[in-house]
Amino acid sequence: MYRQSQAKLFADDSNLFVIDDNLEKLYDKANSELSSLSRWISSNKLHINYEKTTYILFDQTKKAPSTSVNVTVSVPPLHINNRAIGREHIVKYLGVYIDDRLEWTEHIDYITKKVSSLTGILYRSKAALPYKCKKDIYFALVHSVLTYCIEAYGNVVKSKLESLVVKCNRLLRLLQSKPRRTPLRELYSQFEIVPFYHLFEFHTLKFIHKCLHATTSTPTIVQNWFQRGNDLHDHNTRHSANFILDSRINPKSISFLGPALWSKLPAFLRNDPSHSSFTKCLRLHLSNN
Image (cartoon, rainbow, N blue to C red; front, side, top):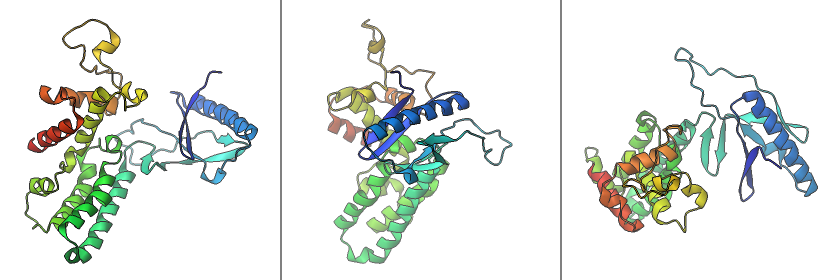
């Protein structure tokens, strides 16, 4: 039977994605799929936690410049097993806060508060911690949080990241016992990390490199996000191995921005098949620029 939705499962976390350009048709599709899902669950003697079952409506329609508040659009109800499903504007999915306009404000605020809280704790105990311990704490509790899914949330205007960058810089000065006027480049090179504003670019390019050179360990569905000339034709042209930038794709999506960033890299980086060597050289390249 033809399916109108896609299910994404991770452990006991299940999500159903339904797409349509027309809002009314979208809700009709969703209710139809939920009805089928309810019958399948009942037939397999499974149970739904209705209290945790919600939905989010992603809408990228831009507001008019004169509009100061979001206009609430009247939408029909969604039901599963004759129970209404509540609508959320922000959901936490696999550790990431996702809003219905994909602006990532909530997730960035969450990380900023986490860094700020850790700074306060470490300030009171900085004298008792050796340097290596401070560095380990940064990578375990801060850097891992900053880089988690940064390929998704990191592509925002710099003004949205400004507060987070300030908090990170302050924490690095604290951990390294550096004065306030210490150049930022020195702070980041001390821990051998990429400056924060380059983190999105750094991890996106590493992701592209894996799709190109580590095909056996990268899921095919992920590799298919990026098309090259030789995927569309068999002609051995000079640019057949280059990525194709599809103008129909959202320029903010990784499917478009990833290849765009990759095309700007020096040839020696693009042609390096070793991931460890590529990562090391890319870090230097971004830090120097």
